[in-house]
Length: 84
Image 1 (cartoon, rainbow, N blue to C red):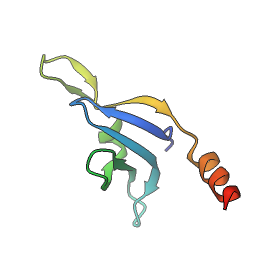
Image 2 (image 1 turned 90 degrees about the vertical axis):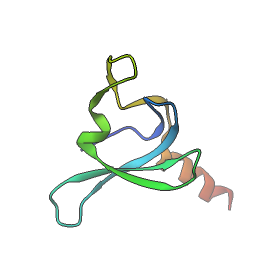
Image 3 (image 1 turned 120 degrees about the vertical axis):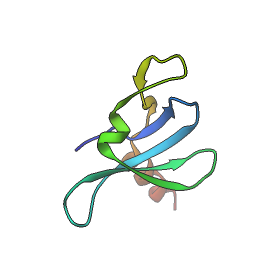
C-alpha cells in the first residue's frame, strides 16, 4: 500500500497532513495515518476508506480525500536533522 505524503483536503473542507500508511499489528489491514491541521490530533483511517469516493452535499461522487500539496516528509525530516 502506498499513498503520497502531504496535505490532503477532506471533501467536507478540513485539511490534514498525511504521514504514511501503517500495517495493522495483526497484518490484516492497512491504515492511513494523518494529522488534522485544524484539531492538531493524529488520526488513523482504513486505507480503503481513505481512498474511496463518497457522495457530497450535491449527491455527486467525489474522493473522500484529495491531495492538495505533496510533501516528501522523509526529505523534510532529513533537512531538519541537518539543521540541529
